[in-house]
Length: 474
Image 1 (cartoon, rainbow, N blue to C red):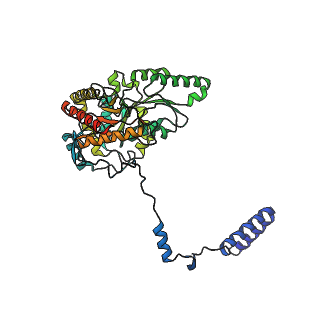
Image 2: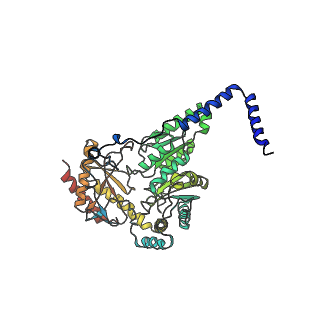
Image 3: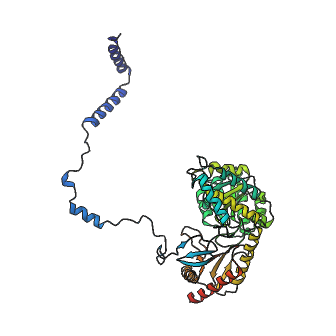
């Protein structure tokens, strides 16, 4: 049998050749010849010969002429670089050290004075002994700790919602929540004054965005009515096109309050869900700090998705989203910042839990914050060189120059005023916007109020600002 095997193979080959089409045999022969050519006759790679190499002098000359591109582009204006930017050291509490000088702090979002609060700090420090300093993984991959689940449960209970989800970065909460639900060919109706995090969420969603005029509910209704008429003409397309409204409770770039009752009315009339960004209103609005729904006396179920940062009133790190369980659960598989980022460090989750407890049991802080915001606006209203923007309940106050001038000139003058205020012991900042923000708000001097400020502190701040304006303005 062993001697018959080669003969059988040979006979099989002859049978194949006799039965196979001639073009098939020709093609196989061409392929065989091509393989033989590649293996034995094609040109092999050879390193450059010595005569092609540069001399040592030529190499040195080329190296001397080479100018490398900067690793990080210069994003600062030509008249203000990293070397001249203010340097903050220590905890930015009621007082803050700027360029080595102790200043009254009207620059950071420490609305309730919880940053550096000793009880919260001690609890966070104790948690390091149990959990370490980081989670080392996303929530779905060994990054979930018991304090994450506890924080989500307490946030949902505090706001009266079915479920909550937390993100490790405040910016990522709204910029992840929007594209988790709205996709290509969906439609978003967004306020034109929305902050940068909202704008990045819109871009990530790849949806069609229709902007309505800032805080103009009549313009929003006009867009919704136009869309309703288009849907009637093409009901098949309308059936598969999702639509959303996106707004802020208190607008970061303007400091004014959303007319939430009218927004909810339009939501119910046109059956369009609402994304409500509450980073500035959580822990600020409402008798107990539960945000815009409590402030206006609207059931929280009338707002489909509430998103907020924990980096303002809670003086911690991260962000969260609350709503009905089936809505929130969708983000656990579709929220980019939840799925692909390391989870919130346990120590900051503990700090957030403690801060939430303080907010829940310290209505006096909320009352002082609102009182201080109103008092500071009253003092600033008498400064003729400035226009005071925003609503009385907002702890952020944008001061813009009353005199008409170009944005570049106004920005330069306001920066000079801010620098002069720091020299005289009051830390304030100018609003900064990236070139890609659209449309960029007018330049402003931004003040932030804390519940820990006294009326004497606020009076001192206004006096320093007036003196700086008198010195810096032409």
